[in-house]
Length: 109
Image (cartoon, rainbow, N blue to C red; front, side, top):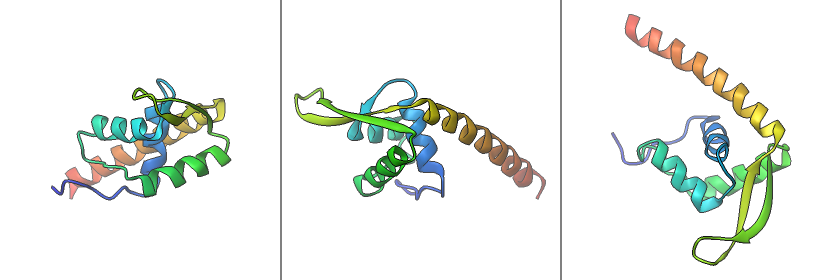
């Protein structure tokens, strides 16, 4: 398996929402968390992450504010809104259906 896998359409959003479901994080923290929870399968680069964060903020799923990172640098922290939590639930339900359908299809073919 390659060290970095291209994200399927819609996967990045749900991974970002899930990463932020526990606590607010800055961009690098989100990227690290996604790599951690996927066992390194998904490596999210800034060129993909920051446009997604901006789009999700425009959709009303995220709020952001400036703060200080663990290494004392200025960083923008993102957190879920109520709409973001609802979107996470909706997307999680969709992925559960997709995953079950793919598992079923792959076992029967």
